[in-house]
Structures are given as C-alpha cells and as structure tokens.
Length: 260
Ligand SMILES: [Zn+2]
Ligand SMILES: [Zn+2]
Image (cartoon, rainbow, N blue to C red; front, side):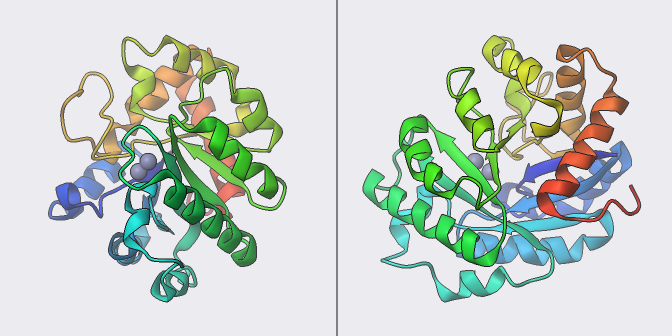
C-alpha cells in the first residue's frame, strides 16, 4: 500500500474532480491519504472530504498556512479549534513560516506558528510543517516544542545543512515530487541519508508534479513516482520502502494498520 501523506484534493483545482482523482489513486494502490487544510474554510473542506473518502483511508489535518496568517487577527478561530475534535483529524497543519513568498508579514507568521504549536501540545496532536526559506527562525520556535509535539517537515527543503537538527528534535521528513526533478541532487542526498523510520512521501497535489508530469496538475496517484525514485536512491525495493512508510505513518498519525 502507498500513502500520500500530504495532498489537497480539497483545493479549488481538484475539488470538482475529487471522485475520479481518488478512484485513480486507490486503483494505483494508494490506501491512505492525509488531506491538508490551509485556512479555516479549506480545513473544513479537508474534514468533509476525509469523511466522504473514509473508505479510501482518508484523514485530515487542519490549520492555518503561513500565507493565510494575516487574515486572522490575534487568535486562532474557535471554529478551527473545534474542527480538531473530529475523529478523522489526525494532525494539525499545515503551519509554519514561508519567507519565500512572504504573503503574510513575518512577525504575524511567527506568532501564528507558535500559537498553533501550543494548540498542538494542548490537543496532543502531531504537526505538519510548511517551512520555506525560513529554517533558522522555524527551528528557533520549534526547539521549545521538541519532545512535546511530534513534527513532520512536509516538502522538506532544509537540505543536509539542517537535517541533523531536524532529526535531533525527533522530526520526520516528507519528500514529494521535487525529489524526482533533474536538479534535485541535494534532495536525493537527503532521501538517501534519512533514517528509515523518519521518512514519509507525499504529492502536495495539485502542486509539485513529479517527472514525467512536470507542469501538470498533480494528483495522489502520482505519489508512486516519488516512491520509485526514493526506493532507487535508497537501494531498496518499492515494496520494502512502502512497508516501512506504512509503519512510519501509522506511528506518526496514530491511525490503524487495518486493511493494510
Ligand atoms: Zn506546504
Ligand atoms: Zn500543502
């Protein structure tokens, strides 16, 4: 069984065709999906979709993406906190810092990041992190939560430089389509170097389509391409890698291994 540990079938681009997209993924062997929210509405949609596709092994993460942080005054909306109580919700996020786009002021991003980490500690849920061009600031905030909040660095982009510290905090790294791209030698080095029990794989669809679909609208079925590349880089079979990732995901998200 393959797992897409980060996807957005709830996004505008994919929502209308969600049924066929999920069918295609299921028929390709994807049997667990983490559907991730980026703001309140999107998180609501993630939960709705996780319920709708419960039979496909769909779960949800709810949170406020750093891009959206500036839209939410001083505190997290109560409606978002309430969503986390849904039985399909297994993580909070995506949350973090994005200094590449800077869609929200950095100070606001940092504040909302810390608020959501405190929420995760209280709710006893793991977090899905989105960190782009902001590793030093992100790690400075995360250090306070190491050992208290399990962390998944989605679309890990810290290279070898930050890997030791990420692993030292107990973090997992999720790799996506970028690991298949021609220029991504450093990311493939990361894929080779990661301890077996710290890896998850994802699509981040509709973005980040893997080779040979670059430029197209990504979808969960194509996580198989990510598995193939990472298996090759690590000199293991896809089956062996898939079995390891099933264990990693079950342990991180506390979802069952039944029907696996
Ligand atoms: Zn992201
Ligand atoms: Zn995402």
